[in-house]
Each structure stands twice: as structure tokens, then as C-alpha cells.
Image (cartoon, rainbow, N blue to C red):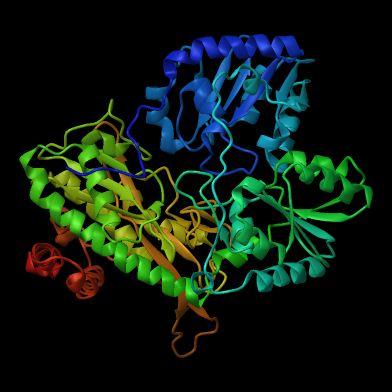
Amino acid sequence: MFEAHFQSFDDRSERGESAARLKALRAELARRGLDGFVVPRADRYQNEYVPPSAERLAWLTGFTGSAGVAIVLAERAAIFVDGRYQVQVGEEVDTALFAVEHLVERPPSAWIEANLKAGQKLGYSPWLHTVDGAELLAKACAAAGASLVPVADNPLDAIWSGRPAAPHGAVVLHDLRYAGEGAQEKIARVAAELKKSAADALVASDPHAVSWLFNIRGSDIPHTPVVLAFAIVPQDGRPALYVDSRKLSNDVRNRLEQLASVRAPDDFERDLAALGKDKRAVRLDSALCPDAIARLVSDSGGKIQRGADPIAPMKAIKNAAEIAGARAAQLRDGAAVTRFLAWFDREAPAGRLTEIDAVEALESFRRDTGLLKDVSFPTIAGAGPDGAIVHYRVSRKSNRRIAPGELFLIDSGGQYEDGTTDITRTVAVGAPSSEARERFTLVLKGHIAIARAVFPDGTSGAQLDSFARQFLWRAGLDFDHGTGHGVGSYLSVHEGPGRISKLGSYPLKRGMILSNEPGYYRTGAYGIRIENLVLVGEASAGPGAEKPLNAFETLTLAPIDRCLIEPAMMTGEEIAWLDAYHTRVREALAQLVDEATRSWLVAATAPLAAG
């Protein structure tokens, strides 16, 4: 029917291998004189998505989610995941080998204090833990009378036969018409920030920051077009970019050398130590930077200046070219998603479609644009009870037929040179139950509350998060994930520092693009999520206003399933917002889709009062 090019459906969990691998790891730890080891889901760059060569947690435990950590002791082991993965971890991990713990409610630090014995040594790789994270581990070990021991080479790598090679994706230059600002100007802005804090140099350890700063993109990790590279940006002088030369064509190298000293990755540790020997003040973000980097500087005599990565907010606040690109990408992507929704509405009621069929079809409609570079993450396509697994990833083993009477949740996105998209729609296959309509409407009301919010400049995401939950809370319901995350510009679909969540302390600033995605999940039955991307912009202040105000512009364009809405639960203002949104969707997309889809679109975006 269709074919997916950018995602596979292989069952990636190797749960059946865990017992032998766990035994081998324990033997290796004993050989090294270690009583335990911490295995995070991380690479040297602290990426959300990591290359296959860094999938150590999945290799050991079978867990394939994007966030988690395991701790292995001689007699017991545990894996820690957050609320998104509570169902998935039980399916992928042998719980006879690994006790499952909640990453937030009982974090690794608490488990260490309770399980480590006095005098024991817990090993960790400083490259795979942030400075802050390593300090938490050390504090927990000290509380137990034990010690945290850094290891130069990861013991998992010593026992991992057939480990994939490190990636060598080609580096490409990101066109100025999409970037909107030259790399030289960006570097000057960073240097100016360093002068303010009296730092001699910044270590850019986040590949998203490095890729943004030098206007480069790559293919080193799935679905996120970053270059795996480090950089050192001095207050004065030329920056240094540490990147594998095999990734560079002669033309790209020449262009980059006009901006920076292009150096081999092996030079990075030596140059960090040299900064230390010269007693330099080196700024790094302790929440993002690997502990190994801080150790290399401080152990050589340098001063670590802790501070938020100055590149992160620069990158998060989109310039005019990036905003224009985002709007163009959303329009293109919205037409593809709408073609999919119309196709799904025709095909699904027959009961022949599977979750994989839906994923392949949606990717195919996006590829038909001719501009799709990749999907922005593996599509989440959950029918019935699979929809209740927040980060469900369909495999050939789990693939479920989409049955009439079920809800179907599909969360997906595309990577285009002019923008990154992320959209979730929940649709009814046939007639939905009254409970499904009620709970969908509660989620929709929260979504609309965020979309309509007007808030003083400087408001944080945490201050807005409850707007999305208030209607669910009144019914004794909630969802165990954030309401929204930042989104990059042809970069990561998950971008800081702005987010809408209980922990979102950073002020939301004009030019940021975030998601608006409240949900509800009934385990074993169905999931509901409605997600659009929104742009923070200026709101008009009325007479007497004493503060500048901001509001959201909804960027995503695709119908929301009217069949799942209970109009009697909606206020007049909420209905007006939905009808205005659907009018905008219809007018924007009608000329971009085929005639059959256009007819479907007209009905799908009719005023709610029209039934």
C-alpha cells in the first residue's frame, strides 16, 4: 500500500538477551573492583535521540524509550523511567532482573541511598552524566557511606560484542535564507555574552547549539539533523570546532575554516586541559554539559563558571526568516496531514487498516511534498489500548488492527529545511462512546485555554501549565507529561529552555515555538491527545494595561475531530475559537489538497453548531 522510508517497525527490544548481558556486566564490574555501575540512556552529547553505538541502556535491559537509567549492583538491579514509559517498560524489560522504579517519584539518588552499602564503589562514566547529575549521584553515595567512582572506559563497551560503529554523517551548510542570521553574527553575540559574565570561553557541548551556531546540519542521529560535534567559543579570538574530518567535504571545510579552527575530536580533551593550565574561566551549563568536560578543565587548574548555555535562548527565539519558514512548513505539513486524515476516514471503518498501515500512509503523504528530509521522531500511532501508551512505537510484533469503535491517536512530525513540525490528532473510528466524547472534550477545552491565553511578558510555562489541566482536574483526571515543549528550526523537535509544564521555570519569550498538547490516557482502553504548535507573540494591551502582554499564535493547520466533541460541555467562547480555527484551516488548505480531500475538509471544518 505505502512504504515508510524514514522509520522501521522492527522489534528493537532484545529483552531475551538481558540475563546473559547482565551477568557479563557484573563479572566485568567485579574484575574492575566496582560494586555497581550506572547506565543512563545518554551519549557523550546528552542527546535525546542517540546513535545506535550509544544505545547502552537498550542493549543491556531491552528498554527502547528515550529517557531512563539503570543501576546494576552485584545482587540487584533497577531501571528508572518516567510516567510516559510505565507501560512500555513492563513490556520490554524482564522485571525479574530489573526492578522498575519511577524516575521522578523514587529517583536513582533515593534508590542508591537505600541499596548501596558503606564502603562500596559505584562506577559511572563522566561522559554520560551531566555535572549536576554526577553531583546528585555523588551526594547519594556519600549518604550511604559509599563512593562514586569515575571510569575512563565504559565497562559495557568492553562486553558489547558487535557494537555499531560511530556515525559519520556528512556535514551540510544550512542556507542563510532558512537560518536568517550568519554564523559570524551568532558567534559575535555569544562572545558579547561571555564578556558580560567575564568568562574567557564557553564550551558548547550540545550538538543542537553547535549546529545552530555554525549554521550546519547533519545526519549523525535519527530524525534530528544535528552534527555530533563540540565547540569552544572564546571571549576573544577564533572559536574551535571539533568534528570528524570524514564528515567534511572540501567546500564545507573551507567555509567553516573562515569562521573557526576546525580540529579533530581527539584534540578536544587536550584543549580543555590547556584552558585549565592557563587558569581560564570556562563557562558551561552544568545541567547539560558532561561531567568529564568540567573535570578536564578543573583538574588542570581552570575555573568552572556555571551558567545557563547562552546559545539555548538565542536558538529558541526564532528570527523573522525562521518564523516565516515555520509557517511555510506548517502549511505544507498541514496539507499532508489533512490528506492522511481524509484517507483514514475513508479506509478505517472497514476494519482492515493496521497501525503500521497508518504510519506508512502518513509518511507517504509527507514525502509527496517533495521537501521532506526526515520525520522529526518515530510516529506514535496507537489504536485502542495502544493509544494509552504515551510514547508507543508500533513494531511488527505489536502491530494492531484498527477496529471500528476504537479511538486512534497519531502523533507525528516532519523535518523540512524551513521548519520542524509536530502534530497529534485523536480520531474516532466509527461512533465513539459517551465517555470518550466527554474526555476528549475536557482535553480540547484545556487545549483551547492554552491557545487563547494572554499573559504578561516574563510568564513561565509552569504558570500556564494548569490552564490545560483545569477541566480534567475538576473531573478527578490528569495526564502524566508536560503540556508543551519547545521546537527547533530544522533541529530537534524537543528544544529548551522554554516549555509548558509543572517544571517549566523559564520565561516564555516572543519568537519561541512550543507545542500545546494536553491529553488523557485510560490504561488498557484508549489515549487522547490534541497537539498544535504555537508561536509566542505580542498581544494587544487594552486601556490601563500596566505590563506588556503576550499571546500564542497557533501555527499547526489540520482539522480536529468534531465527532469526538460534546458541544454541550463547551462555552460560547470555546466554540467560537474552534470554529474560527477550522475556518482558517479550511481557507489555508483547500487549494493545496486534491478534490476528494477538499470535499472531506469542508465537512470536517464545518461550524460545530452545524452538527
